[in-house]
Picture 1 (cartoon, rainbow, N blue to C red):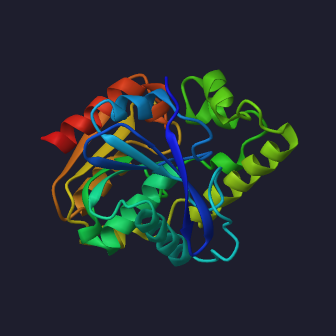
Picture 2: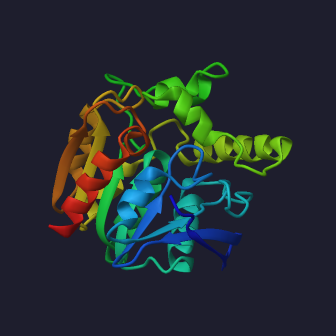
Length: 260
């Protein structure tokens, strides 16, 4: 697995790392929990036929500071700033988990900015009859087992990259958790369903069949609220982070939908 090309671009929040790999039509990816500490097989699978572009959102590894992003609107605007800086306006877009929540918001508020959208178990909704799991309230070491059906591998994914200072990385990891919590506060209910009725981009909703965080019923609720074309795809043997648990299957589903 070859490394992506890295550039640093300017955003109103500060310098932002952007990874790029592959050729073809641009495909932006907004990662979920932990951000993108390293390149993954999922991104490699997408890059076989597309130019994959991964901006680092505020608070996450490679991203600018999230200081000053005090409201959900602040986060949505910062996301659009990141998409503009990474030259992703008008491109296809993938968003996972907390990144999926922001991808959905950006595509809803600026419908012309996103050509085709894929959302992997996005946050943004809450139903008291089928509540989501508070991943931030778990004891140390338990979060990966809730997010992934490969918890040891997911722990390794979130661990300090080669050459990184362990103490510094622990601070980065803490900041990423704080950023993720800020994005979905209050837990799960950000009012996304009220705004996603504006979404016009064809949208693929992906859910792992073993998602322990967000029930699959949320996919159906989200699909009904989307004004444009939407499709739901369940990924077998996958948890909340389907793109990590089943990278090839998830990438194939996304590319098939976007190329149809």
